[in-house]
Image (cartoon, rainbow, N blue to C red):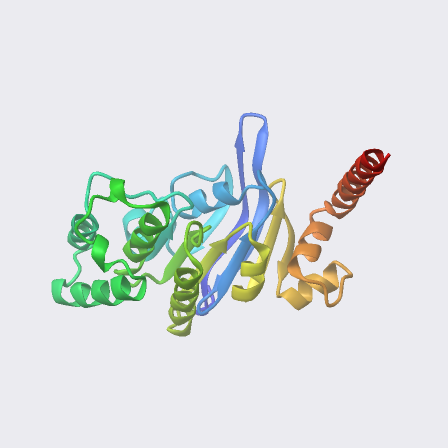
Length: 270
């Protein structure tokens, strides 16, 4: 595998009964890039991420990670090198952040002094110091998300997999997380970034993979995607809707809404 490629996905498929969640999907992710994984609800994004994490086994195809590792055959080694942020914070709510970080440092065999320095940096950057000894169950949605993000970073993973990581964060914290992501890639790490907020994807991602009904629809930079969609200069929202064949449907719905609202206003005037 090319030294610059951290993940190579070749023709993977996954079905659940009669539902084909992922259908012959292939892509590569390089060191130093933010790779956007986008698609409508039910497109297969979560299933794809779970296969990369080794939580689901592909029915067919191959996933090659970190120069020759497989997410299932080399489960422990792969997980050592990944940081994962889920849309809903998957952290132990019966613990305090301190207890959670101590637990993570223990199972990952991290240096205590170095970990303490990193935690101080991230806690201060995300303004979460005051919550260090509070039960996670008592924290707000946004603060719990900050704790989950920090937990994904303290072992300095080669790959960050982030599913809607900015959900619940205020504007300042979201900006800090974006900077953390950029710093991670500047040091040679890679990020898989999945979101429904297309403005964020357009701002952050170096390349974008759009999937729909489990199939690859398009892959490339914003410029390459706009050319593919025949929408030069358009924003990612318009490109996305065109490539996922939703643009005409959206136009029809908007036209019906406008017609309904305008008719109501005319009736009210009468």
